[in-house]
Image 1 (cartoon, rainbow, N blue to C red):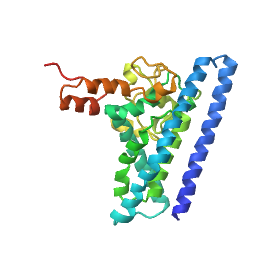
Image 2: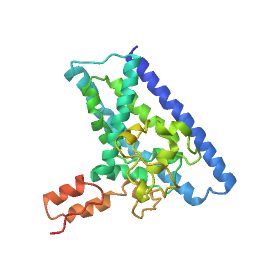
Image 3: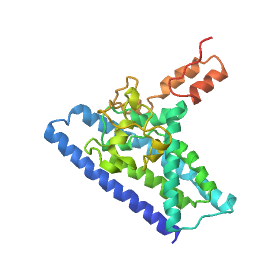
Image 4: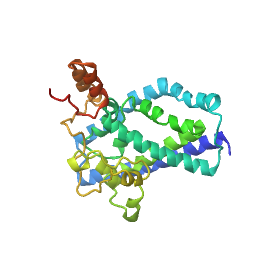
Length: 283
């Protein structure tokens, strides 16, 4: 097995889940048309979600393509132990990438600086396949940092990318209300039902179901919540804009105001690295 074969497999996985997502999106559109639900607002939300790919891809092309070279530098210049290209290392890479994604995702909810980027994904009041491509411009930076431990374990860059793409591609199809609960699969896999909970702004749904492919990590680390009623999608605060610029940078103005009003370095640190909504303790 070679690096070229791994790269081909990565592309095939991405393509398969893209086609699945496209099929579900077509069903969503047809359903909305027949039910008369394809309103101007829904179309506006889809356009706003799709527009986030503009800054996201610009950053990926101009900055992150070079930044991911770090994995090659580490693998060929710093790490003397290297895992081979085999079917078991492929399976292991995807499994560890899935665990990594759980913690990458969870920390992005718990650290305000990271939340300024991930909140973009949560800011839509609608929930459909197009929501799945709604990304903050700099989300890739945190993803790169979060996967450095995989390089230290000896995974070749091609296997790291395979793991990252597999976890992200899998999640394409779960951004839908068209698919209900899936019986026994709900115990093991992240499903549309589980991910609808994750996008809910209801109190009991907040910060739940972080998993990528497997939901067992949420069950293991006590962040699991079953879907009981249809969530209210979007941010907990009142944000309902479809203006692309406001969607791309929705959290930055608030963070800027808080930093400008910080009375000490510790307060500034708190605004940057504590949970979203943190305020300094009263004297």
